[in-house]
Length: 311
Image (cartoon, rainbow, N blue to C red; front, side, top):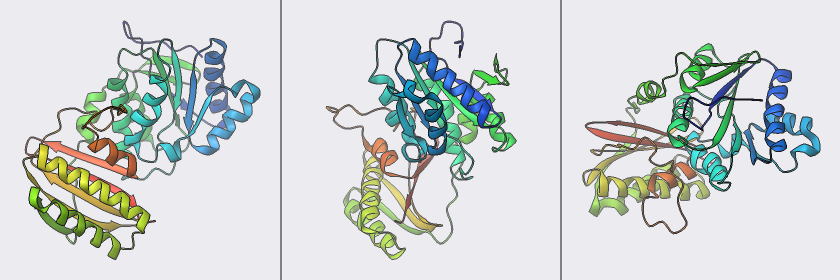
């Protein structure tokens, strides 16, 4: 499968709009086969059943391909750029790299979707200037029409019905602005204010509230890490204090921290962390252990919300 970059831009980010398994398999296996034939590193990060379809069709040709179940690695869309896409591309510098990444599938919730479309928009910033092609499949039969419409907005190139064309509505910055929506919390959320002296008390408060709501010890450790990183960031970078809220939502515990800071880097938390890096790991770790992270930032403050399954 030949994909064209924008003029002067080596990075290629096409959306593959497919209708049915046959079209999906033909397009993705051609993309992978072309990469293997050219000696290029190839990774396929799609939901598990889709992995089986592609791998089964490729047979021995897929031996050297990196296979990733996106429902696990990309459960939280905020993990995908640093821990899936950049992790593979950065390990194979010096030549062209091909990746199939399918972050949006039938079953993604309305709460998850804004984070998914933000992720797709941010790929363009994260890989600008890189000699990488990331093909993103979209199931036109299963996904809502507005999701397919957003694929045209977040991808400069669209492949549909075997034809490739530049998207006339490509506007990733517009998507990021639209998805930077205010996060409303329920009136019954447990709430506490904190500053530097009250950081330990804030962590204890969150752990106690989550335990009462049925969170298991293993996930309590993840929650404790999230609270520690977010509240410390508020003290150091967000005006010295903040508000912590926690509540239960379906099978998840939701932890939210709001402070007076403002995030200027849209990729904060999505930059890979170097082994020798000191500091700057806070939001990366929050993304890594959370099942979903939502962020809203404005001139008057920032809210970071982490969703963690109770078990």
